[in-house]
Length: 360
Image 1 (cartoon, one colour):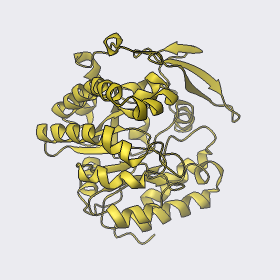
Image 2 (tube, one colour; image 1 turned 45 degrees about the vertical axis):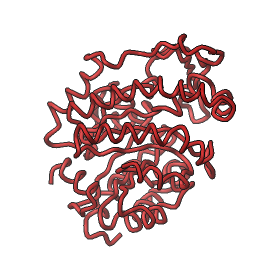
Image 3 (tube, helix red, strand yellow; image 1 turned 30 degrees about the vertical axis):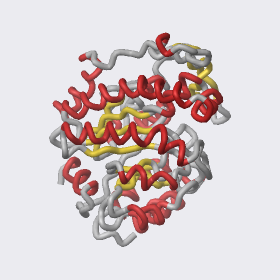
């Protein structure tokens, strides 16, 4: 099977030759693996428009072209920088010797009048050069995904700050409805363009979960976010009924998974196993939903042995892979504290034990 055939079969709840796979990385971890592969390149795929060489070298089954707020994470090497939304970012070092960016300035923290809001223009043709390149060069062999995470809830908190966002969702519903309508314009335009260009999957997302509970109530999700996602999903599937929609949220979001399925979601990422049991999610929603992720990145990948990684992969294949509807992946970016041997063990085990019929 081609990579695309394998991916689409799995999403359609068929059993292909093996479970599709991918992994995603922080830039430092990606460079580490590239160096191991003998590629002296600083072109990384993490949140970039046309991606880098690693997904093809590691036999991923789809390629991602990123667009929107999520591309700001590693977009500038300056110690501090401001992205096109006016959000201020700063680089920090961590104890493992790596570095990461955090938001240090929320441009709408004190906004009163939404007429002050100016949004980036996502109708610009050049924004989509990367996805055009991927489709033209690789679209027959690989699945092509348009990644547009940090879509509404996260974008609102990046702009307002988390404290004001949570307060206004409860205390200023008219303001929040007007703001979210304005913010939804970017993903409406960008998502529609990605679907028109021919991506196989459009991937949006907002982190609604903490480790063991939701950041907002299911009721607030249903009031402010579900109707907007539903409108977007319906529009994109009207443009191309074959397009698949993926949604990312870290953490515990079990109370709203049924809502996402109800409005047409096809793929849920990352099914973080320290927050939700992938086997239970598969049993409850697996008839309608493809699970993407499930491999633990909090303990097993960074701190486990090679054998621990193999056993983790086998567990997820055995409990989530049968009947299709599964894409195996670490549950978030692999960071530089993940040993190289564990990264390679993930790929080896996913290919060796992910072949159908699964007997891991």
